[in-house]
Length: 172
Image (cartoon, rainbow, N blue to C red; front, side, top):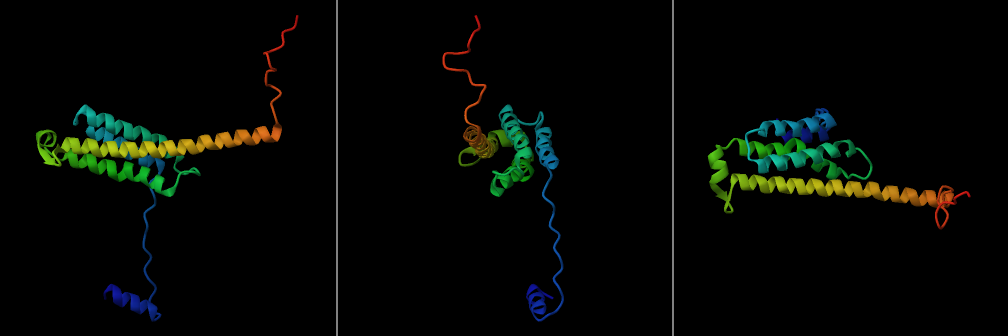
């Protein structure tokens, strides 16, 4: 029976559709483990330019993981962080690692670039994107701190701990 027969059978009151199992999203530990696996995979196998870019991405991902569930980070931003760690980064690096080193680092393959150059471009794009997301979330946190300070100032007025004009009074 095909999908059309299944649909029309259900519409006529036939059998119930079978539930589809949706995998759970990765945990913070799984996200961090994914970027660490990439770092381990490249150890001693890639030029320093790749190692530095992967390390940058890994630091931002690890910094972002505890912040993924906080208000202020959009689902699209959170998805980008998770997908970068679990899919985009491992796939880009894996494709490069499957190539013979001499071919990957010296043979021009597209747009006048070697596979190494293309990988560096991809890693730069991922790094810049993650940095923008991290900055946006940090700005939201900073804005919340400023707003809270304004609330406290309005609620309680000036602090009794503020120094008077001219500095502290000295007893003679």
